[in-house]
Image 1 (cartoon, rainbow, N blue to C red):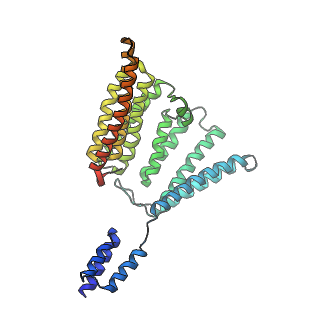
Image 2: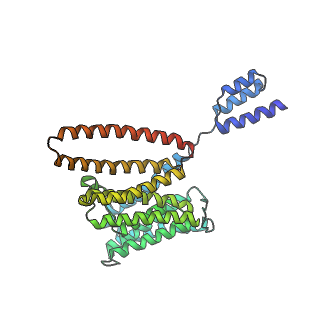
Image 3: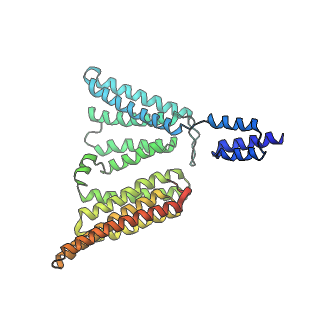
Length: 351
């Protein structure tokens, strides 16, 4: 009886922690596990379950994206034969049905984290929000319901997305709401234009990015402090961190006459992200704090070497070699630092 209890206990420990099967071979040789139960343990190892959690979630998210994209393509190809009113009615009905289903199935509202009631709940809510935004944008484009007040046409879906994110407790919808907030403030930049010439258009965009990034970080800290949807804090901080640091770098690059002033503003912002990474043991935040800081410091050093070249005759070759040595050694040092910090944080990383 003792042998049976011990072998069953070890079996469950093995299944739960993926222990090496050689341990049971050793215990069998020492007489702690019988041959019969060793065979059962080997069978359990061969037939143990494999998690497909992330694969299923990925397929569901892709399904939502393909469905919304396919719906847009269908409308584009057949708009003349279907009619705008029919398409708008169809989108509105789908979105309404999704919100109705999610409202029926959702947990009671709480400022703490509410667990998802069903695996399809999150994806149906995300699809409903996408359809809602599509409906409002399509309605404005076709019928000019808001006239020339394009800010209002962006503000209403943004407001509805924020309400939906908190009411239904959904991080994906919160990300959509923050993106719409940026669009409402004029932060909408096409990836193609950005990739071609890093065109932030005007100084107004840079200043808006700095203000919005700071605001999102403050909201993140406030959510944790007040414990109001504290699990939203990372999403707010993630958007705010990238937006703030990228905007400060853009200020350094585009307003190069005042790059030192932008760098002075960049240093405390980058250090704050680094400090939060160390406190939270988040290698993700540490990685971007170091990468953004490296880009900013390298830009300042290159500008300094360019200034030095204009002041010292025949210093071109020496400065070129100095630049090469700097980038080689600094890149190697940054890799070593990241490797060391990753080992230090270890399993405590909260990405």
